[in-house]
Image (cartoon, rainbow, N blue to C red):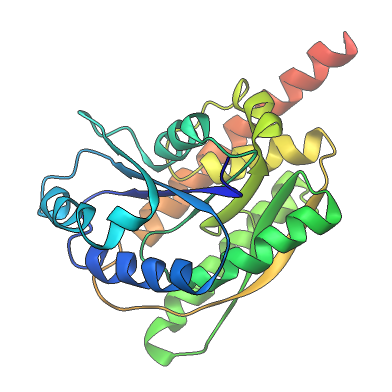
Length: 246
């Protein structure tokens, strides 16, 4: 059994996929950690499938991998959920494929998980200041603050693309998860908080790669996320009523 299963989802990531996979290969070659890699292509229509195929027989051939290609675009959250359910390890996690959060953080995350008997580990991001990213960083931090206050979260951040779960714990949470896209992160952490899971926020430093334009439309996605957060809050309240019989 792998020590950890790592999900990498992507959609039209031809500009960054090869470089990210080579960084992952370098990391795995330097550690004894037995990592299962699960690549999920969310129906890309660029050269991403061809790039991945070209690496299957070389760089990826020496690693424990699963390769999934969806025939429809299901959304980031749905892909992560799909990968978690396919994972063979008792510890499952995902990291954003652009590796803005560097791959080497997987090792300390695994150590924290094992040493402290955690249910959930999430990344608490800090950012290397760059003027060109100032607006993006400001919006990210502002959104985190709004969500934390509105949803009464104890966590500093919920949306970082770096999360790990005990698989059995995640499967219990997944029965209640409705969100399939970016708000999946908010919902899964709302549920983690509601069920009083042992959650650790591990400090991580984001290093923007600038290899391709972001897929996120900040203003539009922020508004949509806030609307979805209201729906999530209502669903959690309904779970609470059912659990208490009120």
